Image 1 (cartoon, rainbow, N blue to C red):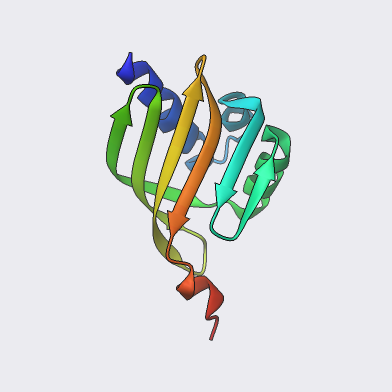
Image 2: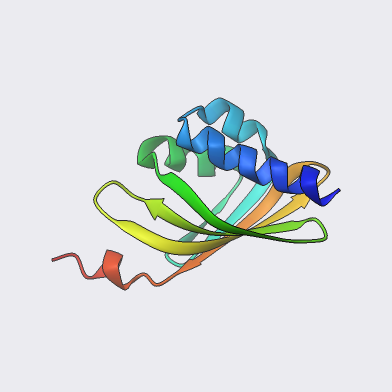
Length: 112
């Protein structure tokens, strides 16, 4: 079971990296919630609108699973900066229901 759960989250990341945003959105529950250091988003379409614009690229370094939850430790290439972050994906019925991302935001806040 964990392998299937993990695959949904990994597939989501792969679609984002390939900029296949429609397929990425198909991995999300329509009521998807995003909780981030710098803000939150409610709804898969709202979140994906941002992702389509930002075009982040993810390099997964480590994967952890517990029940239906998957957590990645990854590098996120934001174009002009790359940050180290952890994302906690809560999966229900084969869809990503919520994502909480934590990272040190100082490099983004101290634009010099």
